Image 1 (spheres, rainbow over the protein chains, first blue to last red):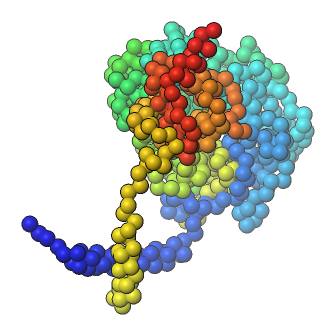
Image 2: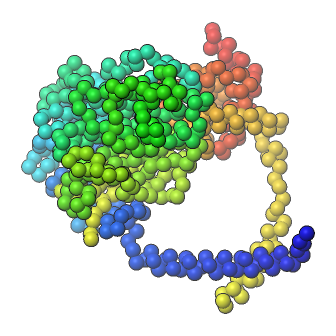
Image 3: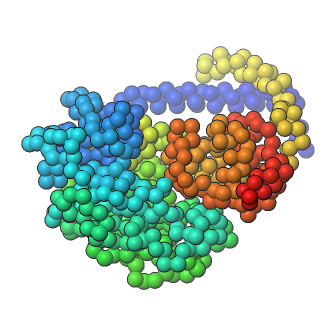
Length: 430
Length: 148
């Protein structure tokens, strides 16, 4: 048996300590030299040739945003700040933006620019504001109410909006329940037969973009079986609606005998769907399993994690890993970024909470290449490290969480964060 | 390598000073509740099974969705409303210390009185909280008040 004297141990420790210390100091020195030669890109990790700046830390809960051709930025806030639910930002030539005004006394998420109007939503209504030729809002205190009386549960209450090229506006109405259980989120509780809430929620509704005071009876349930959509956009190449669904939570918590914690952290997929009128994506009866590449019958409706569900439901066009919370979708039509990005999709992932006790995931902006309105390659992480920490165990640790996406007239990409109200601007300089 | 010569005495001091701090702190003596280490242990396991996904490992909750348990008036205050949340769940809109949270919490009335008492004792004495234990009889009292 080997025996070391106390002196030997101390000596060994000291030698080990010295070499570690030496290695550490020399490494730090090199790292600093390396860093000082590069811009910090506002803390983001980006592909080569791209750079990022924070144009503002607004301390508001900034959700979706739009940028006008003149560079005015309108940002929808989850909660009004000083009584204003929409912020007006102007950018200076040094890459800094200032708040130059605000209007709309309601919180919400949705905002969209089309045909001389700014559209914005609360959690129950959609408004529009006429713009002048400089894209300034003419009557900020007197918007037209386009849609009213939309259902808003406690959860999935936000209303994202997008317009097509034929005078229609699309709005998501999220399911007020996680998986349509008889008792929401109760372990073992089974699904409500037929899930009747789908008559007025859990889908996308279409309304006219120019008709006032519309309610459910004036709209069309354009697509159903979508649990909750926050990111959505109109694809101009195939003239279709694309949505990002937030998949259901808590497979393990609710059915521990069928799903491990690890499986539950990865499943179900966060799905990108292309939506045609009348489509059904299958919530709450099925979920998409991106590992088996199958639509699986939900445990609330008799499933066991393996049995496949009905084939009548549409398949996703992209299936991302679970719970990453896609809050923003933008098809890039600008000319600033390299050709690979043209007409592709950027997806802002707010970041998961539902993976605990496993590490959380998301907190980045992903990119999906597209050709002729269809994904043409694997998705990849485009902008990472919004969280500012290597490992997120709990979402509170994330310093920033990406939410909204917008494209500037010059092709720059804007990303909002609803933790600190930071707006990032990402540009490309080869 | 000249650097190492200067580091040598500092490391020696560090090794020397590390010796006395090895004392183990007896947590049961610091804890405000005397005979509850078994309850805390059981409560911790129950927390991991039924509460952790939403309220998180650090009790910090999820902003806008699931309320934190750290120094929250609902956790550190009067026990009766807290017991009622476990028994009845929470699916109405309420503000907790000025913030709102949107996810529904299911009722956990099907857990045994002792289990609920244990998990509440655990959350009231974790995440920076130091409050009195919850005991079985308090559960029985609230349960019977809800039946009336």
